[in-house]
Image (cartoon, rainbow, N blue to C red; front, side, top):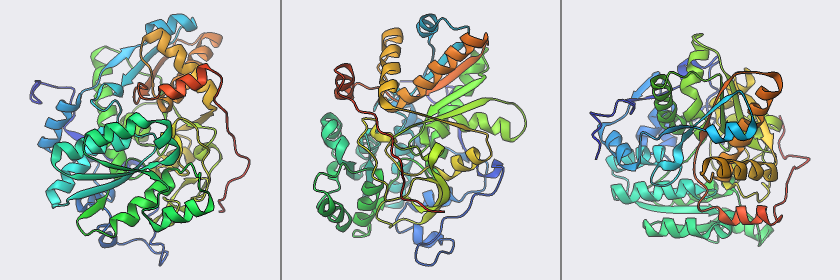
Length: 441
């Protein structure tokens, strides 16, 4: 096994973007008072060290030695590949590279923050972590982290994905986690939504509400979030910090960076170490954040205070949102079925540092199949949104004769998403694009 002393690509610090943002991040508000929420109140929901990191003003946070050791065991550093065959297929003068997070032991980037959150929970003496999951990658990652660190894990999985992707649930069970379809009959929030619609497909917002309600019933439990908040995206910056070192080693500098976005964690983790150069006026990049047209929080959402969950249990955060009661259509990319967005990413979009793009799921699956045939890697449907954008940008380069270097984050593999691919290949996928959203300024 590799030693962390011998791996120069493995970062020793996470990057915290808060000190470099072009404007101060609006504080989360206590829903009872509409005043900035007090850390002590958050500590009943989250692990204490994570609350501290959420509000940290330091540009860098040291990664504990034990966490770095575990990063090696789960497959870090992850590799960068050049998509030579895809370039030839597109007949483009652009170079296309991708960072492949699918080579972690859980097959996605989610394990990066799961390990960190479980480590801090164990250190605090917490016995159980309770969470939500969309497509199942986050739930799987936390289940593995809990197993490795001796924590009990309970997962509320968006109902549509629970039934679309049964092997995700089985995988979580293998690692010892309890998994329930959300909305469920286990919580008041879940029963409310099931009463309204017994076939409700669920969504991340509802699953978050159920997880938090469950946490508040158990003093030895804490809530663990897989995206959106600053401590989560900070843990994910190990992706971008590795990527910078790897690109320098091969003598390449990206012109364009691309990542998919649900809540924003894989995109932020990949792009923020490069955005740091923009914010510090050291470099310039074109940066694209890609979402589903079924949940277009970046391109059609309103920037306002809203709940992070559908039941209104969380503090209010200022972000691009479609409204916390938005009924997210049952697209196969369950990790993108969220009504809101990371507050830090919202600020970057407002300042036009990051450009949003949105696609329908059928055109995304088309790009995913092209990529699989060209490069041999089957991407997760979420990650395929980044592939679709990279393909379009490479075609643009061909059309106008640009010799650009495109770099995207392939945040996970799609080997447990075969039902979605079967539906696409047999013309059973639908595109969704809502007309109205339940949000007001």
